[in-house]
Length: 587
Image: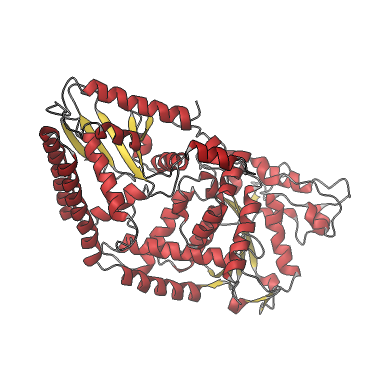
């Protein structure tokens, strides 16, 4: 019986509370501050809408791993022996086939920082007082993972399996730690076949693969002195049996796991035209929502092998339904034509705005010329690649270059796009030449060149009033860092923040409400750390103020490129950047 929506919301919330208990205080407060929004987005499969919440990646990573193994089970390009994936029963994930069973534990490190998992993270135990089950004291990551096999043998949880001892166990700990880490555990990080074999010496003697000084073996053999408990006294098998079947899988970052799973979805649904990425992403989001729901179902005491949570047949059936659903939302011709149509009408609206609002004929003509260039560039790019406009939507609004399915009939997409294009025009009008650059990057980049002031490189992100400035900056920072193109940019990059929520209320209103506050406004206190010096953030509301002053009557200026104006423009821009740095970025 499926969990009710309210009950599921509560269960996801409880799981989130448990996850954040290990976070740093500032990150914990940040997640709690937006808990309801986070849970709602997770249940809807919209993790990307959480913006720059880097702290949430560890929570999401486990679900991505589940999806990775679900897709590996049915992908035509992957070899797999399992026909069912069980979520959070024995361990985080369990794979069951005809002859094998694999217990998978997921452990994450905060992405984007310098920390990695160390060997001692895997074998360190937590000290407990007296508990009913002595095995509970053997609670290191490795011990908990391998003892799931004992639980499988001893319990009647899985019905329809008559000879459990015939199942060959495998143990896996998945981590997002960097590929270069854990060099001291090479024996386990390279055990991709789940079979560390003994060797035979030249004299014909068997040499144990797991030596007595093995770091895991030594840690597991260490008794619980307080109660005189020893692992060997309670485990079904000897220590070597378990460790030979242990694989520590450095599966990659959240972004890498996302891309790999998305590729498997594409390979499985056999859509090879320009809709492929859009359809795959829609299926990914639906699967994410499905996994979230199933991970927090009210499980019964027993599960039948034929009724495991996610079987190969079930996931195939679900994907076919999601595929039909995606195709109904998107047709190869009309969808991309609709995207181009929105750009076309938005540019027309922007043209009317410039004509009506700027009194100075020369400045008006210059802005219209700049807009005409942008229009011609977008038109030519879309003719060359019919998915161009959809990818630009994603670059501006999501900070990635995927081809998400957009609902063009609802929301504020037109006004948000108009705002974005306006600031591209504003920012490039000072420069003698300009172009879109880094086409394969996840964000949209433009470059302006001048013989008077420094050349400029800028990108834009529109928060659609979903994120405030702090989380918008974090979103931009993470998108730039995750991109194999933009992460190598080291010279000055201006990052335009558009459509972010207001950070400050009317001072009097704030003063009154402060009397009744019982919690701290996390975002008003938080500053962002580890921001590279070359990233320069621009609040476009102040950029708007600059142009507002040039709209009125009586402005005697022939061009925004006038030598007298350009240094003042650059100085004004640098002041905006400095103000953002002082207010939002940790020195």
